[in-house]
Length: 233
Image (cartoon, rainbow, N blue to C red; front, side, top):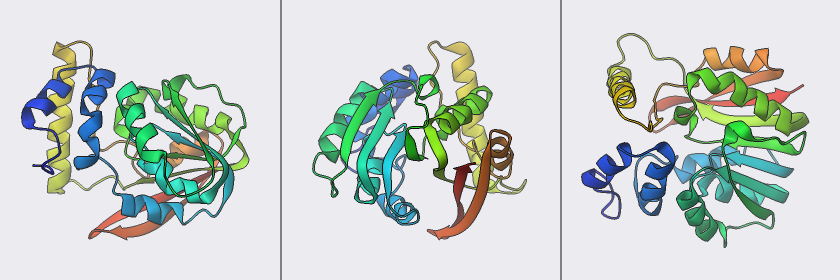
């Protein structure tokens, strides 16, 4: 299923039966060998679109792939936030020699609880929206708006809501149904859902919370993906 260095099915099952935080602590040493991470090539392509900035915040930074892509484009500091100590330990090791001069600060914390106030020119989040409950998305976006300086940008990659006959989407909906049953029966929950933070809905969410939204379509591995730039007015 994965790279030979990736997790086994038994390890994935153990992760799925843990809490979200504990599950990612368990997965951290093998995470970069799974298909769950955002490909570095896509991260680099996104990072080249926004020029240089002074300070950047990478939310749910995981093992630091986004930080590595961002660093050549950041002058002063990149702050990476994740709630998994295991993922942050991997990020600390993997980003130490990343190209660029910006200072890297790694913070263990819940992204919904951050209290940054107009401190960043850029906020990014890659491949982690499935860990934000739908009921918390408004709060998540408000936190990002508060963290950005006026004119600052929230940049991320998503896709459009799939049509009713999209076979891949039905497979992902089946996965979501299994996770909802698991979380109803077992505590603590493991929060991971697909088909979240999609266009056009997320555009309205951002606009309601003080952002202007620009969407650029990219072709990636034969699929349409959307590069979204949400600017704080």
